[in-house]
Structure formats: structure tokens, C-alpha cells
Image 1 (cartoon, rainbow, N blue to C red):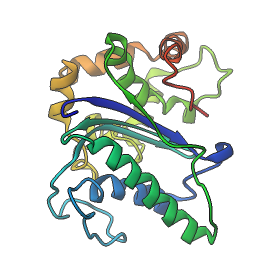
Image 2: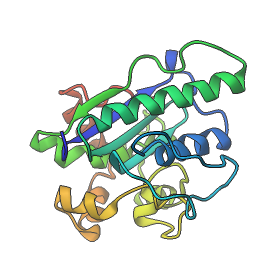
Image 3: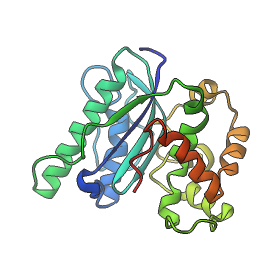
Image 4: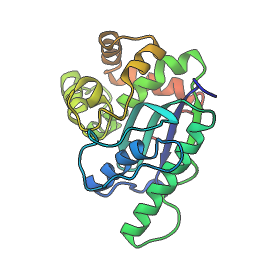
Length: 228
């Protein structure tokens, strides 16, 4: 329903890569923009590396957050029209799978199953899911057995410069090519944060024990079983 918020996640079949190179990441991000339109998807040249001058959308969803890793992705979406999230997620999976199969000269499934579409409705979901989506990038920096070695400064610097996540649009390069995809104002309004308070709260999770505790809280509701 309009106004509902969803955490979307999926990963490659057998945990295999869904992104081979930067062109693949960009194609997926491009789809976050061009497929978010009533009726047909927007016609956009995939070789252009900025969305600043792309045509305006008649949106079916709002993208609040997104993070891409080599074999899985996470999205936080706000429904603008009834059924918009389900329609958008179907478009996203079908379009990207077709692109990869053509590129790899392959056929069949790219993802291990249908994307998980989890409505954010319980208090702890609001408290933890946005941070989990941002902090998922820790798995690119640290091995799972590095229990007490999370370096806050190093981690935040990585987050701010990692191209394939909305974190950079929130707290890094304010002129990012992808900033037009997300609705920051709606995110802060919906989750009752301002930028400063959200950043401080995120930093509070930048200890291995606190990060693992956050994931364990969400695992109880089967929300975060896609890492790795």
C-alpha cells in the first residue's frame, strides 16, 4: 500500500557473483532509475555515466537506500502507488538477468530465488534495517574472524568513497552521479532522523560486537540471511 516501506534483498545463485565489473554495477544502478516509472521504462543510453540529465520519472516507488556487493544487493523502498514495490522488484530482476545472460552468453537463473520483499513495520525494523543496509559494506573490508578490529575512521572513509552504495550520496560526495536516485528528505522524515543524528547512531555500531548484535536482532525475523 502507498506509504509502506520494504527491505528488498537477493543474491546470486549458489552465492555466485551477480556483478563482474563496474559496467555491471552501473547497469544495475541505472535500472534503479529508469525502471522507476509508470508504464514503460525510461529510454536511457546505458553508456552515459551520469543520471543528472536523465528524463524525469513518474515514480512508482521511492528509493531510500541501496547497497550492492559482488553477489547480493539490498534496497530500502517506499511505495508510491499500490503494488509499486512488487512491480519494480520484478522489473529489476528480469531486466538485469536478461542483461547478464546476453553479456555472458548464458541462459537461466541469475539469482538464487525470488527477491525477498520484507515490509518494515515493527519498531526494531525501523531501528536497525537502515543501518544494516549501510553497514553491510563492512564485509568488504573485514573478514568475519576479525572480531575486534573494526577501525571507525577507516570504515567511514571506505563507506564515503564506495561507489555502489547510497551511503556516499548521504555522507560522501554530495555531487555524486547517483544522488538523483534516492529521496533523502523522505528517508529522514519517515525514520525520524536528521543527518547528524543518523550518522552518530551509525558510528555507534562500528564495533564488531555491536555490528554482530545488530545482525542477530534482525536474523530473529529472518531479515539478514543473505550476507556473504
